[in-house]
Image (cartoon, rainbow, N blue to C red; front, side, top):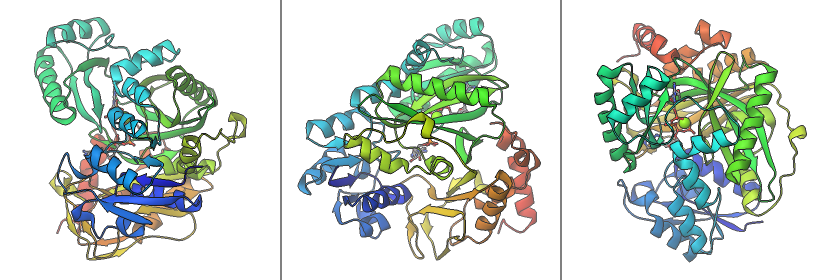
Length: 458
Ligand code: ADP
Ligand code: ADP
Ligand code: MG
C-alpha cells in the first residue's frame, strides 16, 4: 500500500481524498497557495507545502513545484482530485519520471481519451454506439458544413480538448455554422490552448447518463452503475442522482457492458466515468472522464463502495476485491453542487467571506465541503464550494431529505445556487424523474421568479 500521498488540489475534493487517506492510515501532504494559507486542506493535512501565488497557470497548476513538494516531503504518490492537473497527461508523465505514482490512468491513456475525437474512435471500435458525427476532427467551417449536411442538422461543434461544458456551440443550419464554428474555435483556443474541433449531431434534449467504472492493473474492470446528471446549466451539472429513474434493466445492463468494453479497449486503469447521452431507448457515448468525478458520492451512497479508497488501492497495485456480480445498488442518492454564485446576475461567481456557516446533518445526509464560518471563497478558482448529498430508501425519501437538508443550511455572506436547487426538488417533472438536459432552460427562469417573489433578490 502507498505510504504518503500528496494531494494536488484544494477545497472539498482535497478533504475528500484526505479523509480516505486517514482511514487507510496513509500520510497526507497538502499543497497550498498563499491565499489558501488558512484553508482547511492546508490545516488538516499531516504536512502542507506552499507552492506559490494564486493566479491562473501557477499554484495548483504548477507541475514542477508540486512534484518538487512531493519529493521534498518523501511522498510516493500524487492524487490529483478533479479539475486542475487531473486530466493532464504531461503531469502524469512527470510524476512517473520522478518516481511518483500518479493516482489515475497512465499518461498515454489520459492523452488518448482526453482527445474527445479520438475517444469516439476507441468507443466505436469497442462496439459502443457513438453520436453520429465527424470521423475525427474537422479542419474548417467548410468541412464542418459538408459533415453536417451528411449527418443532418442541427449539429453540435465540440472542442476535442473540451471540458466543463466549454468549447461547444450549436449550429441549426448552414446560416449559423460559420459563426458557431468561429466561436467554438476561439473558446477552445482560449480555454484549452487547442482549437481542434469535431462535429456531433445535436441530440435534442437528451438525458445525460454516465457509468462509473473501476479498473485494476491486473486487467479486471467493473462498473458501479449509473448516475443521471441531466440537470445542467450551460452543459454544467447542478444536481445528480443515482440510480436513474427511467432506465430499463436491459438498457442499464447494455450501457454497463459498453462502459466496461470501452475501458478495456483503452487499457484503462483506476476510476473513470463513461458519459452517454440517452434519447428514448437509444444511447450514445459522448466522452470518458479519466479521473474522479464531482458527483462520485451518489454512486458511493447506493453501492457502499468508497471510490477514492478504491483508487488508492488500485494505484498501490492491488487487485479489485469485488467482481461485477458482487455489485448491487440499494436505495437512492441525490447530490446538489452548491456554487457561490449570484443566480440573479446570470450565475456570476460571488467570492468573498462567509460570515456565518451552518451545514446540514442528520440521518442520511452527507456533506462534502471545506468551508467554515469566517472562511474566504477565493475568486481565483471554481465557484463550487460544497456538495450536499441525501440518501434515502426510496427516491422520494431522498428528495424529501434533500429539501430538509437544504432548508437547514445557512451560508451567510455569499450568494449561492442553493435556492434554485431547492425549487428543483418541488418541480413536477423532476418529481416524476423523467427530465432531460433541457430542464433548466425550460424552468430556470421560473425558479428565479419564484425565488424573487419570496424575497430572495435583496
Ligand atoms: P464532472 O464531469 O465531474 O461533472 P465537470 O466536467 O463539470 O465535472 O468539471 C470537472 C471539474 O473541472 C470541476 O469540478 C472543476 O474542478 C473543473 N472545472 C469545471 N469547470 C470549470 C471552470 N469553469 N473553471 C475551472 N475549473 C472548472
Ligand atoms: P464536457 O467535456 O464539457 O463535459 P461533454 O461532451 O461531456 O462535454 O458534454 C457536456 C454536455 O453537453 C452533455 O452532458 C450534454 O448535456 C451536452 N451534449 C454533449 N454532446 C451532445 C450532443 N451530441 N447532443 C446533445 N447534447 C450534447
Ligand atoms: Mg462531460
